[in-house]
Length: 230
Image (cartoon, rainbow, N blue to C red; front, side, top):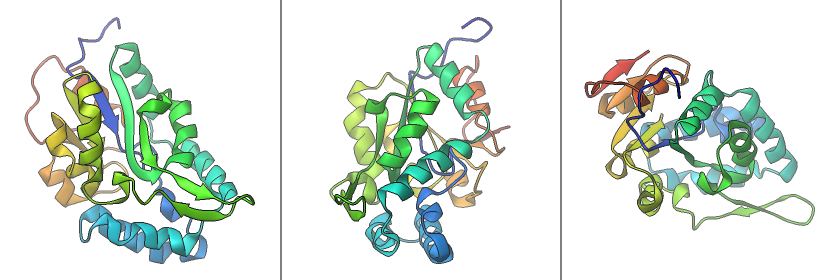
């Protein structure tokens, strides 16, 4: 890539909700019960309680249909964070492997991943089940991504096949939990500011754009731990 330094990372893994897209998917599905669902989501992302305490509960309340998920997929794309598509394109052009690891719903994430140019085999999220009419029939409750510590478990599985070093970009407690399985964790606070997550991260992006990720990946010098990027 002319004009850019050699990338400092071989792989960059992104969270989705409030990172690649400026929405929390499960909250968008909640309709009139959004305040109730959003409170549960926010608590889990802050680390107030484990994700598994609310994951199935939220879906049982909402019972999203296949049509709801298709609508959410379009909402993810419409609300993509500034620079998301450009960042993914620049990373992949430079030979950096890009993936998504999310506690979100896989059928809703796949169209966003395709729009961004991220291959399907590098999209990890939670599958949903529908009946013949397209009504909600449960979720993959065996997925590690439906519980706390699941992103760390998933990245441990992926790690042997990822190009090193590995950079993780995310906004919540479930991302921070995965820190031991990556080389650097960047807290993206451009959508939701979670001070506890930012304080524990290696680096912080505090502006509502993912373009600073390119500065991190292509920096020619070593960046200071927990340094802000804007």
